[in-house]
Image (cartoon, rainbow, N blue to C red):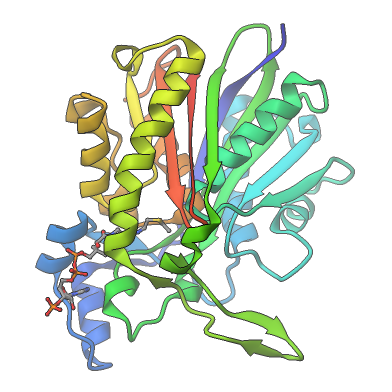
Length: 324
Ligand code: ACO
């Protein structure tokens, strides 16, 4: 049998770190009131990074990809597939993946974006795994890269305090042993309205609002339930149980959603990888950023069993169980 396995991880944060206090000061200048206390208590977020205006998702993603390649002991020329999960691509087209491919000095291998908002990385990892198992690819770069600061309405305190910019990447290689054990993906488009950027480009103009809109409480209620069901379905497919999970790496949106999920899975909180406090919600980048932080921080060791879980706009959700 042919499986896929992560052989290297990497990540990148733009240098400008904005604490809650910094953001509260910036917002106050616009007449928008918030506080470190409110943000920490409701979300667990303490700081996020914002990219400079000329820095794109493919820039952040290329930095993360180079780190992942180095960790895997691979060169760009060893890679035969690039998938970038993003909702904030550099352009309408071509894909951020094509632009990133060129930045890495590569040409020829397939490269495309996956758009599943905050579930993007688990979607992209599942697609790459399927392509490797069927022999369409042998060594893939799977990247989550976002500049959500571009789509935040800094007049809307209910959303602009939640998100940040960044990128994470993995090298996923064909292997005789798993690797990725199982995955479970879902979408339900009837929930479009609770989390979206409704604008589009047409007739030489932006039509509709180009800013993120969210019904936070509706998202919260949906998220905990679907994350539990995706995790259980993935464990069942792999013939494993909650007790086999060494590390839970959920999408880093809100500490309360993450703790709620861990509780439903009866996992102790010390098995939860948390970076939302330092990164905010980086959408498709949040899971590979958290994974890389936990690997480089010495928490995650080779052979550990990881449950990755995403949920986001669409609504989309899903989980991937893997042996690291
Ligand atoms: N600072 C200060 N006060 C605020 C802020 C702010 N930044 N934002 C809202 N408030 C106020 C509101 O105006 C409201 O005031 P009022 O009672 O006078 O009307 C009060 O705080 C409570 O607002 P709620 O919206 O009820 O607050 P809630 O406890 O629901 O927390 C939050 C809001 C944090 C958005 C929460 O609903 C949440 O986390 N939802 C999930 C969001 C999420 O995780 N989204 C991402 C998942 S998918 C993805 O990643 C794309």
